[in-house]
Length: 184
Picture (spheres, rainbow, N blue to C red):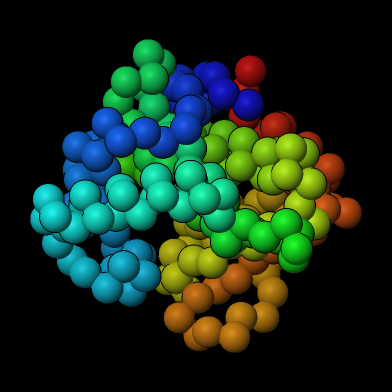
């Protein structure tokens, strides 16, 4: 699913340590973080916090509990966001999917490509049965994305989040919807 999409032309690749500088830019962008302050419980990301965040992401990738993919420029050098499959559990057959994009990529189709890539990897390569998403109740654009692609909202035990999920049985129809929205 990588390639051109409504103005975004880039690559999806594994997150790497050299993405740290761009992660600093993304996590300190107030537009990007407007719905994530509650999740990360901080408004400013200093160098030490970014290093710790990157180290945690890379360690979780190494131990297999998380897969993080960068959405990067066409050469793959500069990361503009990342999509993750988190809390990977072979025993449970499920994972949480999350995405953070620099505001310059909003409305370009990058989210559709990133989420589509993560879902395809989760249901295909990892053979997961369920992938869920959590977003702030005020993040209407993300909720609109889920609704547009028939990803149903489900009950959340935490009122801080609106929760959506894709089951393996409906993945083919969600996949078709996402692919239809990404121009080739």
